[in-house]
Image (cartoon, rainbow, N blue to C red; front, side, top):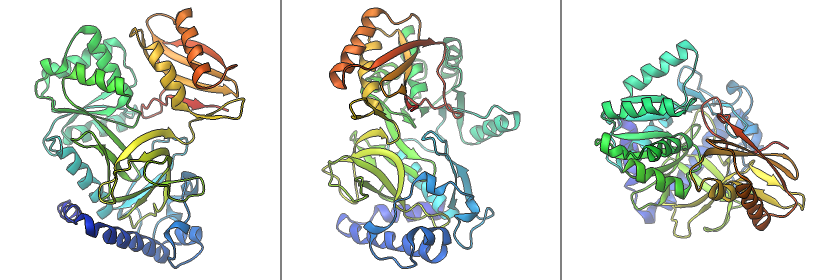
Length: 421
């Protein structure tokens, strides 16, 4: 870690005018390494010589869904690498690997960015809203890791008011310095505090900041959390197989990690688009020699800000996952978040609806599952359908199902739009 932090600092110290040459050098270095030492990557490129960056293949998760041993570079084995698996929230889970120096650089990147908010990874006490394995050995293992990692975990599979009461008691007793976890779970905790008219900083004055991750953060949810917690809420965007991709800086910008990653926005033909233009988020891990993540399509759509530079790219907007797109009878394609924005503003106005998901079951049919104290009334349903007709197209059918809880992934994530066609 000490060596990784020194290397990370050296990258930070590269002047803006020299950063382009540094980046081109790292891109060529990682491609040449894998073309020489990784038969799997050689087979994808169809060559052993690096010629043109924009002609390199764009990898998808499906390309990587084969035994890990078939994808490792020469000289790497489970004995000298870090192995983990993705959550599968995109529908395409797979096992991945990082060599240990690259994995250490990932942590150097995380430690640096959390330090923007005065958080010390070795000593700051974390309130963690995450999933946890439910088998005995897995559960105990995670609890031990939490203890050693200066954090206390609140499992998020049951977020009833009764459970949140116990969470509140912990905040009264423990000197938490920051909150970290899945967005939807922390939003529910903020709504619980709002209902009880409690400001978290009043009962846990050691709190400094809240970092949310893995799910979309909406402006009104951020405002609610900052109001009820009394601390800044910071938005994190990352991928376990890569690193932190973007992290909200102290100027309220979503600053892209340009130290260990190269982030591109590409069009449908896999060519770069200008800053300010929407496209596919494609990422290269500049240091991982054990496993190639070169021009890797993560499955998200985004926009880089026009004021971005190579040394300091700014993510202007994250639109949503490429596979979360609704197909409409007219032939129109609409990002799933369009539905979420339309319904969210209407059915959450009175605070009755705690959370909801939208599923497309037919080309013209959608189901809304929601958790609430009372059932949606006729007026609310009319308002939703009026908004859908205005923003999308007429003739769409919606059904509404009140639930006690919503289905989450095995890790506790809430997938807010699902295309089940």
